Amino acid sequence: MSNARIPVSLSEENYHLNKTIYVSLLSVLVGIVAGFGAIGFRYLIGFFHNLFFHGTLSFIYDSEVPFVSRWGFLVVLVPAAGIALANWITEKWAPEAKGHGVPEVMVAVMEHRGVIRPVVALIKSLASAISIGAGGSVGREGPIVQIGASFGSTLGQVLKLSPREVIILVGAGVAGSIGATFNAPIGGIIFAIELILPEYSIMTIMPLVISSTIATHISLLILGNSPAFTLPMYQFVSSYELSFYLVLGILAGFVSIGFIAVLYRTEDFFDELPLNSTVKALAGGLLVGLIGYVLFLLFGEYYVFGVGYAFLTEVLADSVPVVLLLAVLLVAKIAANALTLAAGGSGGIFAPSLFLGAALGGAVGLTVNALFPELTASPSAYAIVGMAAVVAGTTGASLTAVIMIFEMTRNYEIMLPLMLSVVVAHFITAKFYRETIYTKKLTRRGIKIQLDKRIPVFRTVRLGDIMKTGFVSCSPVSRVGEVSRKMHEKAIGLLPVLDGQNVVGTVSYEELFRSGCREEETIEKLFTPKDITVDRNSDLYDALNRMKKERTNLLVVTDSSGAAGLVTRNMIISSYLAKRESL
Image 1: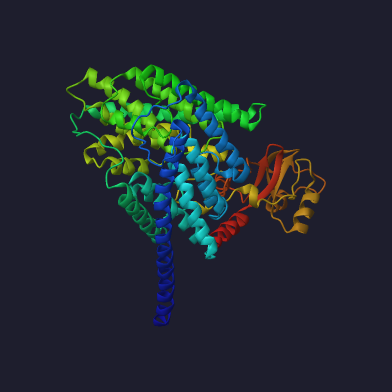
Image 2 (image 1 turned 90 degrees about the vertical axis):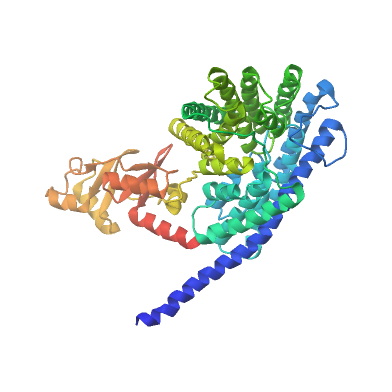
C-alpha cells in the first residue's frame, strides 16, 4: 500500500516544482522590464530636471553632482509647478499613484490578491519623474517599486495565474526594481521578502532571485558596475567606538519617529485646509522652493531638491565639516519631504531616509571625532551607519537596511557597527511608535498590515470582514426560560450578554441547566462576566488570543457605535481555510 502512494507524492512534488519553474521563467521577463524601467525612470527624471531648472531638452543628468539653476530667485516656483502638475495627473488618472508608492503595493498584496491596475505604472512614473525633476524632496525607489510590481501583477492577470502566483510576480517586480535602482540585488530580494510577500518558501524566493539578478545586470550593463556610494577606507579603531554607534542607533530611532510623525501631521494639516487641491499643491511646492533657495543663499547648494544624492556623496567624502550645517539639513529635509508629499507630490521616502541618516550620522561622527580622535573613525563611517539606521527605523526593514548599505558601499569592515545601530534604531521606533512609515499610511485608512511572516494568513483577515451581524444575544435581566428557549430554537450553546450596547459576559446552556433556577428568574447572577469584545479592525490572530485569554468560543465585534457583530472559533477556522485556498 505504501508503494502505491509514492507516485502520488512524487506527482505532487513534480507539480509544485513545475509551478516554481514556470513562475521563475516568467520572472525573467519581469526582471527585464524592472531593469529597463529603473533605467528609463532615471532618464525621465533627468529630462524633467533639465527642463524645469535649466530650460533645456536633455536626458543627461547626474544626481550626485550639485547644480545651480538659471532662474535665480524664481527657482522657488519650480517645485510648486512640478508638484501641482504631478498632483493633477494622479488625481485625474490614478489616485493610488499619489504618495510614496510602497504602501500601495503592500495593500495590493494583502487586500487585493496582488491586483494592481496597469495604468498605475505609467502614471506613477510620469508624476514622480515630474515631482523629483522639479525639485520635490522625494526619492525614486517608491515609484520604481510600483513600476515593477505593476508589470508583475499585469503579467500574472493576463496569464490567469492564481492569486498566490500573481503575488509572487509582484514581489519579483519589486525585487528587480530595487536591485536595479541601487545596484543591490540581494537588498532587492530582502526588501521584497520583508515588506511585500506574505510568506517564505522556495517558490516565492526563487523568482525574486531571478528577477533581481536580471534587472541588476541590465542596470550594470548600461549604467556601469560601481557601488551606489563610495566610502573612504574604514577601519574599526577601538572597541569603545561601539558605544558611540549605540548612541547613534538611539538617536536614529527618535529621528525616525519624528520623521514619520511630521510627515503624517503635515498631511493632516493639508487635508484640513479649505482649499482646492491645486492651490494646496502650489502652496506646498512654493514652501519647498523657499527652503531650497534659503539653503542655497546660506550654503551654496539647494540640498533638499530631488533625491539628495549630491549631499550623500559629499558627506561620505567627509566634505561637510560643520555640525550646524548637518543639523540644519536634518530639519530642512524632514520639512521639505513632508511638504512635498502632503501637497500632492509623488515619490519615495527611502532616499530621504538615507539623507536624514547621513546628516545625523555625519553630525555624530564629527562630534565624537573631535572629542575622541584617537578612538573613532572618520565622520563618513558614522554617516553610512546612520543611513542604514534611519532606513531601518522608518521602514521597519532592518535586514534590508543592513544588506543594502553593505551592497551599496561594498565595505565589510563597517558591518559590526552597522548591525548594532540598525537593531537599536529598529527597537526604539518599534517601542515608542509601533508603526513604520509604510504601515502608518495604511492604518490611517483602516487597513492593518502585519510584517510578521510566521502567521501571515491569520494576520491578513480582519474581523469586520467576516463577522456575523444581527446575532442572537440576551441581557442580564433576561429570564432563564426565555434564554433557554432561545438557545434551543437556534441550536446555540453559548450567548453573549449585553447590557444595552455594553458587552458584559457570556451565559451557556450548561450554566442555566446546572443552576436549578426557575424559568421566571433572571440570569443576572448566572452569566459569567468576561471581556469578550474585540475591535472590527483586529485580525484572526488577535481574536484567537482574546478567546484563549477569556476561555471563550465567541467574541462580540465592536466599532465606534458599540456591538456590531459576532465571530466564533468555527468562523475563524473557516475564514483561515478559505483564505489559504484562495492563495
